[in-house]
Length: 121
Image (cartoon, rainbow, N blue to C red; front, top):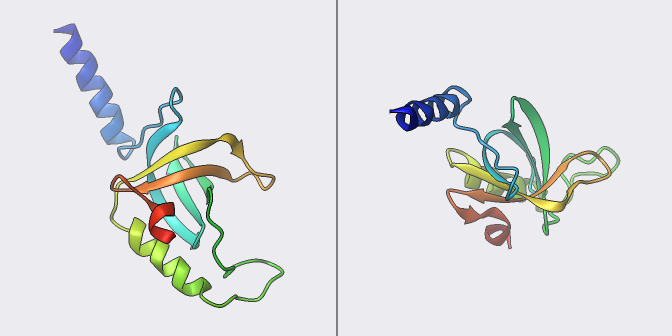
């Protein structure tokens, strides 16, 4: 009976928190997409706060850089990333160096279990 109560409590926490979890042991977890900033940067809701995430191994054309003009194909890259992540279960796998010099989380991103980075390639 005690195990059932614990499982119910854990399920309730997941449900109340928007089905977000993050397993610090393997640096993976489900998050809620807030917005796609551009083709290689997203914002997610994680552990009760909004985090900016930079997709590892991908560099798409700039569409929102403060000192660069909108580059060719940047809007298409942003739309493609948004189409992949909208209405998907979004999961992050953090890289070894968890943050870049701008404070963004560095992560591999999965949409319904499929690698977003691989899809962008």
